[in-house]
Image (tube, rainbow, N blue to C red; front, top):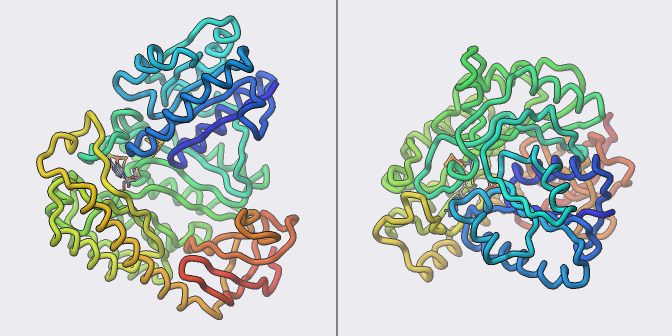
Length: 439
Ligand code: SAH
Ligand code: SF4
Ligand code: F3S
C-alpha cells in the first residue's frame, strides 16, 4: 500500500508532512513518487496567498478523476487551508470525493480518520487539539538537516496575515522536550538543526519558567558535536541583544538571520501592525552587524499593501539598497478574508502591484549580484546537503551565512563539512571547488 503527500507552503508544513508520513508508515504504507499509484493521497495545504489556494483547489479537484480509476483511494486534505472559516464545510459540499479533512493542530487524529475512511465513512475535524511532538514518529526527508518545532501559532496579528487564524495562539514546547529531540537527532547523524516557529524570538513567553529563546540557544550552543544550528522566523520587534550575543558566542549557531521587514515605510508598517518603524529596523541591523560582521540577513518583503503610495514603495527600495540582504523573498500582497487588511480602503490595483514587484526584484538582484561578486576567490565551510536537481552531477550546500553554493563531489559526501572556494557567480547562484575535505 502506497502513500503520496502534496506539501504546499512553508517549512512548518514540510515538517508536518514528515509527521504525516511517519503516521502512514507506522500503519504500513510506503512512500511512492506518483500520485496515481497512491492508496492514500494527502494534500497538506497553505492559504497564505490566494494564488497558493487556487492552485491547491485545482489539484484537489483532479482527484475526482483519479478516484474513478481507483475508487478505494483515500484522499485527505489537511493544513492551513482546511483550518480557515467555512472551508471544511466547502470541501464537504463541493468536493464530496475527499474522505478526510483535518486541521493544523490535530494530526494526531489522522490514524483514526484513516480507519474511518477505510470503512468508507467520511471524517472531518478541524479542532485545535494539544498534542505532544513526542507522540509522533517522524519520517524525515531532509537529511542532513532536521526541522525541530519550538513554538506553534502566532499572536502578532499582522493585519494582512491569515496565520494566527489558522495556526492558533502561540504555544511553546518545553525546553527539555526540544533538547531531547535535538540530542536524539544528533545521535542519529543529523548535521544541521533548524528550529521552527512563526516568531522564534517569543519562544518561552508562555512557559512561565523564565525560559527565553536566548536561553534555548545557550543550551543548544553548549551541546557537544560538530553541527549547525539555524532558526526561523525572527520578528524584528522581538530580536533581543541576548539572542545576538548567543549567536556570536557559539560557532554552532549560524551567522544567518531571517528577519522579514515587509516594508520600508513606517506608515505602511504601522498599518500592517508590525510594531517597529523603518528606523527601528535600521538600528536593529546595525546592532546585529556590530556584533556579527559576517552575518547573512535574509528577509520577506511585500508590495501593494492597501494604501501603499509610490513614495512608500520608494522607501522600500531604498531600504533594500541600504540593508543589502543576502536574499529577499518578495511577494505581491494578497487579500485574505477574515484579516483586517481585507477591508481596508485603497486596495492597490494589480498592474501597480505587478510593476512594483518587478522593480523590487531587479533592485534585490543587483544587491545579490554585488554580494556574490564580493565572495569570488574566497573560501567557505559548506555542509554538503544534496544534489542540485537543475544540474547533472552537481551537489550543493550552504555557507554559514546561508548562501547556496554548487560544486562537484561524490554523493557519499552528503552530510560532510567541506571547504569550498568560490570560482564563479551568476548573480544568485554561486559555483565553487572543494579545496580541502574537512571532517
Ligand atoms: N511568521 C513569519 C512569516 C509567515 S508568512 C513572519 O512573521 O515573518 C511568510 C511571508 O509571507 C510573510 O513574511 C509575508 O511576507 C508573506 N505574506 C503573509 N501574508 C501575506 C499576504 N496576505 N499577501 C502576501 N504575502 C503575505
Ligand atoms: Fe503572520 Fe505576522 Fe504572525 Fe508572521 S508574525 S505569522 S506575518 S501574523
Ligand atoms: Fe505556512 Fe502557508 Fe500555513 S505559509 S503557516 S503553510 S498558511
